[in-house]
Length: 551
Image 1 (tube, rainbow, N blue to C red):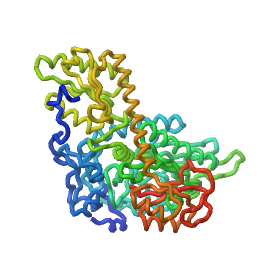
Image 2: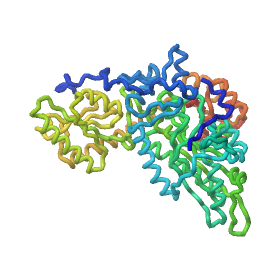
Image 3: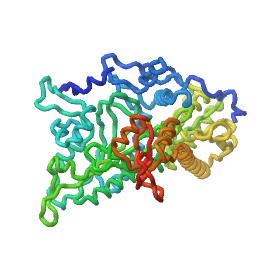
Image 4: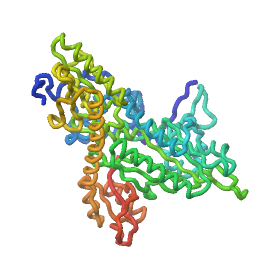
């Protein structure tokens, strides 16, 4: 069957020491590979008119750019953060634009990072009692309409199927923007008694949201995510579940991605459409914008009342279930790029890196090749046996210097170099991605498997810790404590995050957004002690909020 997509009428708004090897290792500006034929290229004229954020941003400077550099040269971060970001995605071969504007193709290296995220979270979900399953991506439009705030919140982003098999459909179908509605439809059929609770499931799926402005990984028409959905007998159980899952996300961000997120509660204005409460993890990117990196929603009984999802309690009374939903998406890959990357390219935390160690064999004479390759293969095998993710780059079409730059650009945490002298001495040279130049290079590390394995694992742990500490220092140095609206506006104008006491109205919050471009990212779980005075109204305040511009 061939189905055609017709967008809602609202979419009409969306119009268009190197000392002994110095001769080989000339750094930077070499061409890593020929330009990609279709890499971040101009997209089909027939594609939908959604604008990419990079195109919009660059119109301000009189140029249009919807592709990254594909000649191995990366725009400096300080010069143009958005161009830098696109250059890394293109050159590190993370993703490419799809033929429909606003979509992307995730390439193997980018998908491998997503798989590392999946691998960790899948274990945590199952440890906390959740089971994986799958729901259809087509949802009857009537389902979306059942929860009033939900349809209001998502209506501008919906993609609708109106024709199937060459015929007009009796009811429009929504291409999944999220699954609360269809999940509730099924929960109503599965839940009958308190004995059926709690019901806790997760699905890994794609979702579609017709965004006006897109940016690869950060905001695209279609993206990948996991979404958890649970149903409980009491409000306390639902609240504990929502908090438990935001804690899972927080630990993942810190321990695996080395991103020091701030966890907290969203304001009423920023709460998910259809939720009583939304909890979030907020990450500071390299340009000091905030990225909402994961959310967990306490849905209360909003959806269960709309869909009639009830159970018979222990006293024989019919009750509506209490629910949660929570999600992390491929947006997190963009967060990793923008948190750790530098002017050389990607910088990946070892625990989520598809390749933790790359081995580059080096020889000049033909009679040196066999011995060097044998040693390199032996080292690679020993490290793989130790459970490390290793790549042996033994191709002879590229120079060692080209390989060094290429793998640095792809963010591989450690590089091992093996040449004829190293074979003779039974040692290797090891370079850290996070410490450039001679400072990050160590000579004479023994090839003996137990010694090398221990050294490499220690260095990987150091890199993981170093990236986190660097990100914490950057975050903390760019958060300003404010006590008045004038101070808030000044902090935001300087590109900082502003943290201050807040108890003002929704209208005041929207005023801040209109006048500064900043929103309340969250009320952090960790709150300062003592009395507080609202920065906007002067009234006593119970909490501080964090304001920032965001993606």
